[in-house]
Length: 488
Image (cartoon, rainbow, N blue to C red; front, side, top):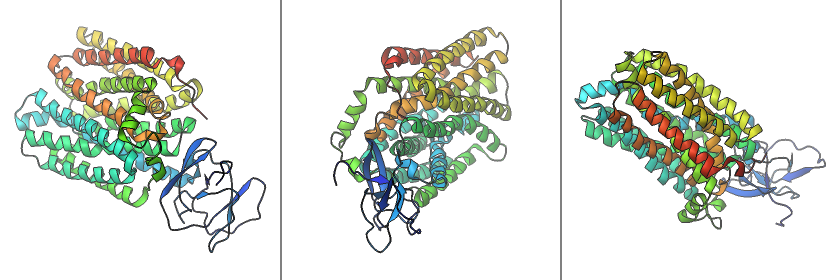
């Protein structure tokens, strides 16, 4: 095949339709074959992924411009207008992918945060301190971070689908182990394994979206995942508080195991491979060392990972301590605590959806510059008003809402800036970002317990420190003016 004519994908599901007369700008498509391995092609320099020779339903066929139909079927014509491989998916299948991958990204936050309202109950059931119970949360975040470091590069090497299926199966077994744990030591061990199993959900889902899209379309698709990923940590405690009305805390983990089982079934039935075999052995990106070198030698990527980790750690400091602050200091019951999280979820929705539009117009780095500054101001207000008692509960809740909304503005921006320039090693790039988020958050969150939960001020101090580091990394490492514009 000449360099002037490279394969482009066509919309799946067209095999066997009645051909029309050729028109100018059309290319002929070969008939569908049985091979379902992905191949990577190039259209205008943009990586394109497809299923070879066109599956009868649901795949992404690849064709050679100018070739005539082969086999028993007549050639099928299709306009050569596809820019991103995901554009070749019909709307319904694209929506299916987003829904399933979005639900998968929620698996990690649901694993960690659904049991937050029950933490005081765990403390009394196991007769241990608050700090010990917070360590069970730390075990999950550390497991999640380590798991992403393993699963992300592994998915670059062997493909996305199999690591995702195996890790989800591990998560189901670990969730059952947590539900049956007789003591806090085994509980912590199974929580670690839960984190390892849930690791694939976020990192591989983001990598699969990067396999299919880039540029402005990547912003749109990642914003949809970020909406789920951002809402999940906020909705999970609401769900947990409601489940506590009808079951003991162990029942929460039976529900999580069932959710994971549903996700496993969806993966097996509807998700196909998006990482082509050729891309797994591409020159300069075939080994783990080469992929890590590619991302770690990128100044913008490293700076964005720091921003992402600090933003998430600030949010996580709130998530890990809020059940104690609001239920013990402000006398909230589990349902009132859940209602607070529901109100904060509005901020996440506003932030994520608005950021996606602003990022296309102004650039994600400039959206981040505003959101990180707002987080810093909001955290400072929590420290001052929480320590002095000025404004009572509203002096904490109002700036907290703006802090969480600002996190929502940042979620899609950090993902786009981290992944857009690293399509060849999207799994590795996503894994480092995710691992940094959860590992650093897991190390920082116990600081709130060590500082005490007599007021909201210790929580605000940790959030403020994280925000200041985030602002510093954005302006002195990333340097927004040096970030190249997104391709359309």
